[in-house]
Amino acid sequence: MITPQDLVGAFARNVMLVRSQAEGLSHEESMLQLPFRGNCLNWVIGHITISRDDVLELLGQPPLAEPAMLERYRRGSEPIDGEGAPGALPLAELLAKLDQTQEHLAAALAPLGDADMQRPVTIGERTSTLGQRVFFLYFHESYHVGQTELLRQLAGKNDKVI
Image (cartoon, rainbow, N blue to C red; front, side, top):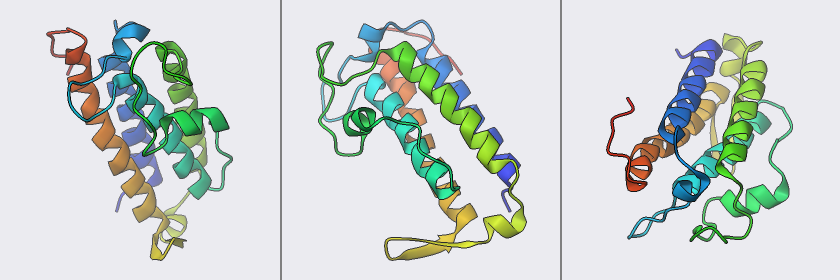
């Protein structure tokens, strides 16, 4: 079984990967849009950041994102299509907010034990354990973390970060 400490480490690894993929990129480069349906690095990092609020709320903690940030980076929001995109935050600010979410996630997960992770939770009509739900949210985040490598290359970086 995955422990809360395993999840803390996994979420921290995702932050490290996002930071590695964003290293050396300007805000403008984070706004570059794919030539097909998709979204820019700025949106992906913002989305990861606000999605961590779902984990925090599941763990009984208050969300960190402001309503305007939630609107800009939520699932199904309009693509960010350039520098003048309303509500898009600077890349450096998004990365700082991502770091902040990691601190809060680590603090919320640290005191949990096996019994906590086995507690049933219901989201909509689906019931699972707390551990299963947090792991699903980690999976969702990892899906987006994988996108950051391609979006780094879109900015013209012909390199291998990891």
